[in-house]
Length: 252
Image (cartoon, rainbow, N blue to C red; front, side, top):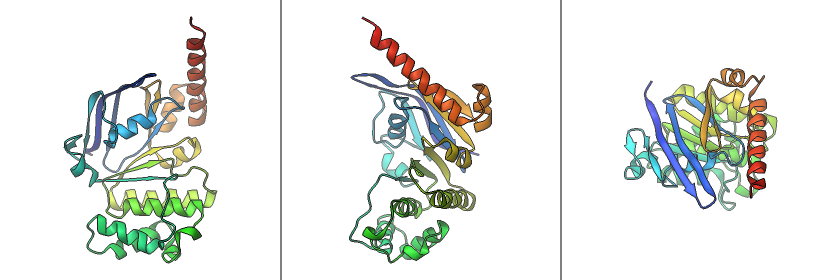
């Protein structure tokens, strides 16, 4: 199984210090990976560097064989991105919104692709709904449909199930599983919901203080830390982070 995302030695330093310190991250085709860690661990910066939004101070990123930053335009044609916090236009119907993006993607049959995506995530009845009529969970689902219309090789999701009702979160999980199985799409997810991560991801990568501290199947990672599940690992790393910040604050 070949790599769709390959990041090596990523580094990024801001005024407050080094946010990412030599991170390696690989996602293989069809693989479901979660990038995890407490606040300040370097997840967002790593994600933005992998998407070419932030240029690393050191290291390399390659997506579907295209090296960033020079090959970013070609690379992004293979990528879909969605986040629960991204807004949708209120004065467009869902079908109109998706058709517009399908045309931007250069799809020959954008309406057909839109309907297929809506059905995959269990919301075909929303095709004529206005943006103002959608709940926050429905907006999240429509955003994911939009990001998958062009059958990306890599789908990047930032907090896809944050604050969602259990039934909507289940639709997200079911739709993503179908997408990965049908199209061979690779998944890179960030989340603070460890229960959802255990249901979605087959591999987790934990960051702490800008470095990779664990990489493997969820149960193996939990066992490596002597914990019962990912939530306990997350809390352990968050506690270590707080202790470190407190110690640094006491230094003269």
